[in-house]
Image (cartoon, rainbow, N blue to C red; front, side):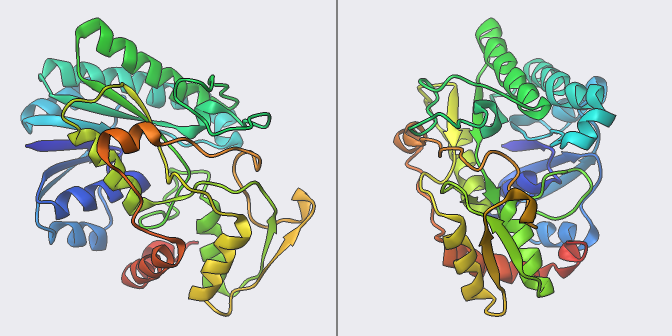
Length: 330
């Protein structure tokens, strides 16, 4: 059973590929460029079968050919432009075309090829900052309030996917992905907003002190746990819903995160600052955002994260030692 991952050579896509290949799956990675040689070599040595196809989700005909030619039965649609303000101002139309129209093209290609299921990745960003929220973000009870172009396009894409499913009786699931860190995140030029944990790790590796703005505890999920959760949705035999929050289901403070990193890298130092202008680590998003409820995900797939902070940083450090070139520009 062949699985296509769009955006397959990006941060989340590579974690999905690693997880699926270790399970013996046949995987097609579709992305703007092929993985760098050391990454491609690593993936090729895993148990499953791997094909890499360079392509753009804006090319509908080429996308349809990939889905049809490889006998793709299931698809994880992770391709997106994760844009900051500067890229938004410079390339507004491209962001919309990739994030929204790219989703439509993917769904059309999947339906024409009679694919069995499509999992469309959305984002916690669709909920907005949630500064007045007193409880966890819930799929049913929390109204979306997207406040950036990225968030607007992700909300539009998930709603289009859900309407597509209803219109054509097609098996589509959408997943609002929470804050992710860990393996395979690296400066690629395609992600403008590197995660707060990535920035902390980079400072630890370079012997720099981190200055952090205190924030509400956040539900960071380690990337291999995220991949396992998403694949649980892909495999779910009879999902009762079409929309799922996907996160850690537990929170930690900025201080707890930095302390765990310091246990792994004892020379790392940090302190908490009172003003955002004094910080040298960008939080990327509201520091007051509440966590997401994952009760729906847990009930239907049995998902629970396997990595605590110390275990995550131990695994992350081992990955950095294996792929130092990916962190060279950090």
